[in-house]
Length: 80
Image 1 (cartoon, one colour):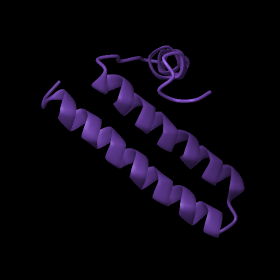
Image 2: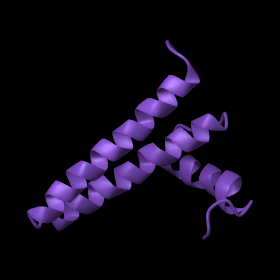
Image 3: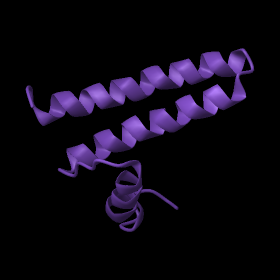
């Protein structure tokens, strides 16, 4: 991997914000399912950045959900 971890984390977080903007446009045009999809991926990019910052990298969506629960929900950093 080229670059450092902080660069990748920043990329993933910026990607999350960009994807949220996409979701807003979809909502404005009443594309409900497409908007939900973009919101899901905005969360996905955000969580992947948070986990990477903690040194955790997963290869599946299910693994990401599990690791988010383990590292952020169980310790009480994010409410259930």
